[in-house]
Image (cartoon, helix red, strand yellow):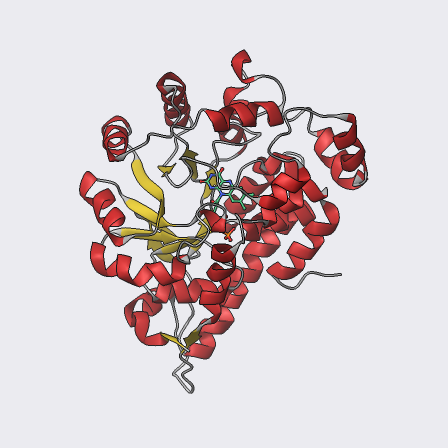
Amino acid sequence: MTPVNVHDFRDLARRRLPKIFFDYIDGGSFDELTMRANRADFAALELRQNVLVEPRPQDLSTDFLGARHPLPFMLGPVGFLGLYAGKGEEKAVHAARAAGIPFCLSTFSIASLADLRAVTDGVLHFQLYVLDDRSLCEEFLQAAEHAGVDTLFVTVDTAITGIRERDVRNGFRSLTRLTPGLLARLAMKPRWLADVALAGMPSVRAVGHRPEFGRGALEQAANLSRRIDKTLSWTDIAWLRERWTGKLVVKGVLAAEDAVRARDIGCDGVVISNHGGRQLDGASSTIRALPAIRAAVGPDFCLMLDGGIRRGSDIIKAIGLGADGVMLGRAYAYGLSAAGQQGVTDVIGILAREISISLALMGIASIDELKDHGAEVVRPR
Ligand SMILES: Cc1cc2nc3c(=O)[nH]c(=O)nc-3n(C[C@H](O)[C@H](O)[C@H](O)COP(=O)(O)O)c2cc1C
């Protein structure tokens, strides 16, 4: 099958990956209501079609996070990319660099920031989970400084990990090492296994030098999860604001008052996110939460949005309703899992083309013009 859209890449990823990893990427928490709402609420919006508009050159570039970008989206933080494809983080960052868009490395990554900086001169962002061990947090911040990280995304919606029942059934959460049973399951996907095995024994490099986290990615990730600070509060965000001199963005905001609080503390933006429906099941979809947040924070505060982005038209809807830019999660993880770096490149290209076609059919020449039109071109059905 030649994939023509993100859904096709999802199908290919399902075929290529061991079930335990595909389900980890694809699933949400409990009944997956919020995960589905992220998609359904995009579908419930319509775009205004305008015809016979004087042709003008098209421009998909726009501003977010204080810089001009050639496309209105970037690659957001997704954990364990190096388990879906050998050197997965490097492949994703290369694809992002080639497209001129930023990449945000997750704390839960097989590659470290230094590994990535060694292979790219592209814009690097880092997603931080604040840990109860602040000395380790400090190490992460120093690594981010050394790697020239532009923006720190502090994720705040995971103090407690939501129960993802697909993972419970597959035994994903309780795994800390390779058992014979797991090895047998992984061996059923030999192409994936060869690709990942060639890259060497995966470990979470950010804590690889700390023996207390154990050996191997699974055990290190389990220990790292346990260390995420469950008492994180606005006081810590204020501390981080003092400590980190680069741009600081709070990821995981759904309520207008939280976005206002982040702005007032001096953050540079927020990501409107429900973690792809992987945390609070029953929470609002992100696109539904967006208009009230934009109204509350005013026109100048940077709002990024993620959750359920699978089509270029989703990106147009998010920007029309007030997002400055959009972040991809599963969309590019499917591409990477299905076809490595080329898969990520293809997903970026497909979304860019879909945006281009939809905008042209709307009679809109550029993303900036779309921002000027705003909600008048994106309405409820
Ligand atoms: C497999 C997977 C791993 C993720 N890992 C992280 C992570 O380490 N840190 C983080 O802040 N968000 C993480 N997220 C959440 C994404 O950054 C993003 O919020 C979410 O995927 C957006 O929804 P979408 O995938 O439906 O587009 C992860 C999401 C997925 C699917």
